[in-house]
Structure formats: C-alpha cells, structure tokens
Image (cartoon, rainbow over the protein chains, first blue to last red):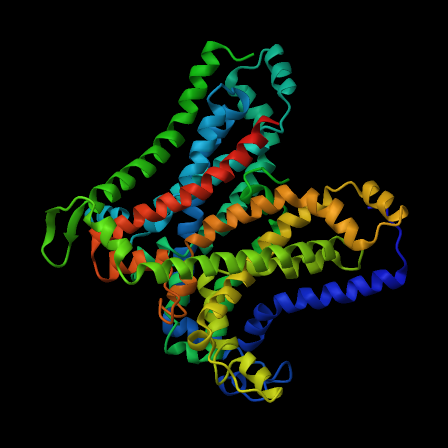
Amino acid sequence: MARTVTTRRKTLNTAFAWAVGLLIFFPILWTILTSFKTEAQAIASPPIFLNFDWTLENYAIVQERSDYMRFLWNSVIIAGGSTILGVIVAVPAAWAMAFVPSKRTKDILLWMLSTKMLPAVGVLYPIYLLFIQLGLLDSRGGLVVVLMLINLPIIVWMLYTYFREIPGEILEAARMDGATLKEEILYVLTPMAIPGIASTVLLNFILAWNEAFWTLNLTAVDAAPLTAFIASYSSPEGLFFAKLSAASTMAIAPILILGWFSQKQLVRGLTFGAVK
Amino acid sequence: MATQHSRSVARFMMAPAVILLLGWMLVPLTMTLYFSFKKYLPLRGGDLGWVGFDNYVRFVSSSTFWPAVQATLVIVGGVLAITVVLGILLAMLLDQPMWGQGVVRILVIAPFFVMPTVSALVWKNMFMDPVNGLLAHLWRFFGAEPISWLSEASMTSIVMIVSWQWLPFATLILLTAIQSLDSEQLEAAEMDGAPPLKRFYHIILPHLGRAITIVILIQTIFLLSIFAEIFVTTGGAFGTRTLTYLIFQRVLESQNVGLGSAGGVYAIILANIVAIFLMRIVGKNLDA
C-alpha cells in the first residue's frame, strides 16, 4: 500500500476503526468483565463497567458445582483426538494428490468437499442409531470419530493447498541424488510441510472445539464437552449472570487465544483455497 | 514424471481417506433413505412397514412445514444481507492506513471463535433479557419500553446473534480479497478525478465479486444447518423453528423417524443445490 495519506485522515481512520472493532468485540469484553463481578453487581442498574469489586468467586463456584475440568478435558480429548486422527489419515492422501496427481485427482477432491456439504440433520438418526447399537452414545471415542469425519475434507483440502506450493523440482533433485521414497518424504518433504500441517491442526482443533450439533446430540453426561456444559446453563441458572459469564469465559478463553494465531489460515481453510 | 510404481503408491496413500469418507457418506445416507420410506416409531411400535412416499407428502403438507421454510429463508437471507454489506464496509475500513491495524483485526475476528452455545446464551441473557439485559438498560436510558427480544422479536434476535458470529468470517475473506487489489488502479482512478462512490462501483465491487460469491455460498451451507443458536435460545418457539430444527424435533424429540428422515432427504437436496454452485467455483480455481 503505497498511498500517501495525511495524518488527519489516518487519525480519523484509526478512531473510527477502533470504535467499530470495540463495538464488535464488546459482547466478549462484557462477558469477561461480568465474570469478575458479584451477582448483585452483574445485574446492577445502571450497569457497572469497571468500578466494581473484582472477585474470582464465580470461577470457584462454577468449577465446584459443575466440575468444569471434566468438560474441559472432554473438549480437549474430542477436539485434539479428532484433529490428530484426521491429520494422520489426511497427510498421505493430500500428499499423493499434490505430488502424484492423476486425471481423477480433481474429481476426488471435489467429491470429498461434497461430503462436507451433507447437512448433519439429514443423517442424525442413522448416526444416533449406530451409536446406540455400537454402544458409543455418550462416549468420547464415538465423537472423536464423527468429528474427524466431518472435518476430514477440510483437513485434506488445506494440506493439499499447502503441499501443492512445495516446488516439485526439489523432489526431482533429491531423486537424482539417489534418495529413496522414504528418505525423500522424511528428509526433504516433511520439513517443508511442517508449517502447513501446523496451521491445519490449529484451525481444525478450533472447528472441532466449537462444533455444537453432534456434541449436543450425541452426549449426555460422561463425554459432554464444553459446548454441552454451557448449554446446561440455558435455564434457569442462566439468570445468574456472573456465573454464566465465568463459565462462558472459561469455555472460550483457550480457543480465543489459539484463534488469534490462526487468522491467516482461516481464510485458506474455510474457502478451500479459493481465496488466499 | 509419475511412474507406474508411484501411481500405485499414491492410490494406496489415498485409500484410507477415500474409504472413510465413502463410508461416512453412503452408510447414513442409505439408512436415511431407507427410513424415509417406512413408518418407523421407535417408542411406539417400532418398524410399522413400508409406506412409499407417504412421509415425503406428509412432511410437506404438515402445518409446520411452510413456517419452517419461511424461518429458514429469513434467517439465511437476513444474515447473508447483513454480513455481506457490513463485511464489505468493514473490510474497506480495515484496509485503510491506521494505527493498531493488527489489534483492530483481532477485535473484529474474535466472535468467530466463540462457540455457538456461548454466544447464544450470552446474547440471550446478558443483552436481550427484558429486565437485566444491557439492551433493556439502553432502551430505558432513552426512555423507551424494553423489548423482550426473544419472544417479541424472535427472528430479529436470532438474525442479530448469528450475524454477529458470521460477520468476522465475511470481513476476513473480503479483506483478503481487497488486499489483493492492485492499488495503482485505484490511484489512477483517483487521479482522473473519479469520485469515491464511482471508484467503489467500478473497481472495488467487481474485484470483490468472486469473494462475495464464495462468502455467500459457504455461509449459506453453514446457515442452513444452524442449530445450537436456536436450541439454547428459543428451542424452536416463537416462529424460529427452521427446517433443521423441525427435522431434529421429528427425529429425536417426537421419535417419528420415518417422517424426520423424509425431511432429512429434503434438507440434503436443498444443501446440494447450493453446493453445486460452490463446487463449480472451487473446481475452476483448481485448474488455474
């Protein structure tokens, strides 16, 4: 951007953009602030913004009453497990499509994408039934598999777009030097592919963490992750604003932090490489 | 450059992903199709035999069907209109030179990372509650009567909540597209004295065409199946029962699997119509 602008113009831009940014961010900020208030201060009229007695008691109560750590652990296992499993399955596939493309590669990629378009509710009962019959209902293992399958197309696509950017000449040079396929993969390709794989893992972890259709419908108590933990606050505990805020803050904090690192990959991953 | 050997290795490497996705697609889809032609009530007699297209006819002719279609269209259309228009404006704003651009970007993107159940509950209670919600305080401050958002203006409320979640996505993609715009072209137009509105219509908007299409298609696919936002706010009451929610209620709440499955098939067809357009664009991009 080589345009030269006056300081006045830049100041105006800055003020306006910050105002809009803060407005959009406000619900999150307000939730975080409210989580440190007492229940009485949380519903005080007029609302109190900063000059309240900061307290951590809501966090203690939420943890004590609903065992936050168990839900957190379930979320970590389900999101982490499905992502790792997905990457293990997707890396070889994306690799093959990027480096040994055939006439059908494009068709396979598009077909994979089409499975992502399948509306979950259309297959809700079959999955529900299979889960009951296989004894997977309310189990973390079952959810790991389902979330892996729904995110697999995105994982394959993201990896494919990253792998395709690795120049093929390097592979040929390695082959000329007598590298075997195994050496080629281990010493030449892997180091170049690590950043792409890392971004893929990050984005898919976030998507799996926030997934709220299957996690709500296929869990009850044992395997329930944070999405279900929060849904249990819908009534009547939801009226306790400070506790609701503390629970919400705990559910979103890990992912907000991870999310900030992944904003660049977000575009590539969610548009299947169509916008870079 | 690919030899016969490397081809078979490649096929072997692709096999697990292809087989898994094939199973994930075919098994439940076949079951849904199968159930959709049956009268199947797991809690009231189980499998009561084949009924042909009865479920398909009944799903469409039930009094809940058209309101559900309408609710779906209002939510999808409303959210798309809001996120695309505001997204373009925001993207153009964020593209301007300013101080702290990175931080503003982070603030704008943040809602996308909030899990749907959290954003729905936070909005429902802390903002839209008719007594203690922040919006009620704001209304009272200006001397107006607070609105009980989720019952009196239920659709507006859901559209607001979902738009807040999806605005970051639209903004981020449109911003990425704007940043790839050749700034010399804009400068040239500016020098020639083209007013800002003309520059927007003739240079910026055409350049964003493809990105806008992609935003619309991808969001449509996700918006057609929003669930948690309705589940924790209205539970489908006050006219917010979308097609997805209606099918969910048929299948899991009233356990009428045959009827729900027929609805599921409709949902699949609907999503596929949108998907075909998206795939065309993505496919074209692969050739480039």
